[in-house]
Length: 281
Image (cartoon, rainbow, N blue to C red; front, side, top):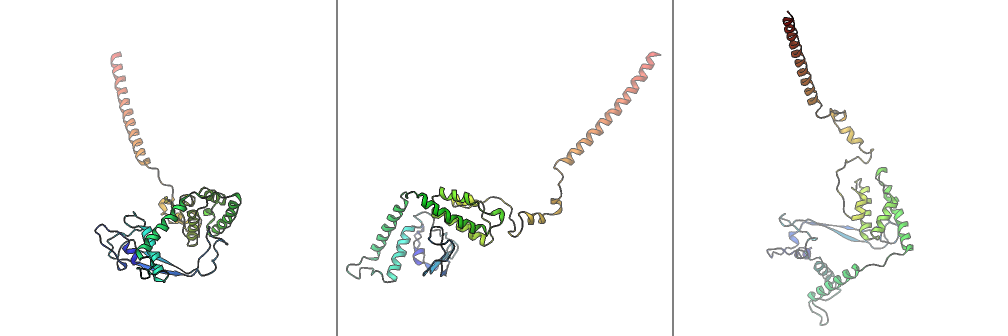
């Protein structure tokens, strides 16, 4: 954690240490098979599976400095940090003798430089286009996907369940990569916790959650049932269309005006009749 803190390059040249971090760790003793692993999906892996998860605040202990390891490389160099961490593990567990204590052993700085080169070369090799899957390999992956989707659907309500054919189409589009399996696994974990995954197909396609305005429903009820019961009575009953009252007032005024005009015409008509009788006389 001290190496992690020191890897942040601050503008004012300040160097952070472990004491500037807010973090916690949890130890897990088991792992489960994922989409890219051999074996039945969701079952525990054999052998020693002890590992640690670290949770680090995105701000320092004083809540003044943002600490984002996924930012620009000149702020946090992830390759450099990985090389430093691997070297630290090797030194700490006696796999290498640093600082040139033994004549043939490299210094710690040289070890770090070697690791940087190894990590960079490996990343470049992984970026090369992989060989396309054979029809047999795709059939095996699709069969495993059918089982995984069926298991996920048992944890979802009927209207939330995934279409296996559509999921497999997305898997083919993404070439069955790790991002696809990671997002499918996250959908399953959300279902286990009773949480919805907005736009699951878009999530599987892009690896990013699409936030869309939608009604939140109780997973133990039918969709929108709880929402309807929460509405005030005046919202459940048909509402008066906007502008009806104003339109009615306008009609009433028009009727009054026409009636007045009709009365004035009647008076005028009586006066004209009287004038005609005078002329006849």
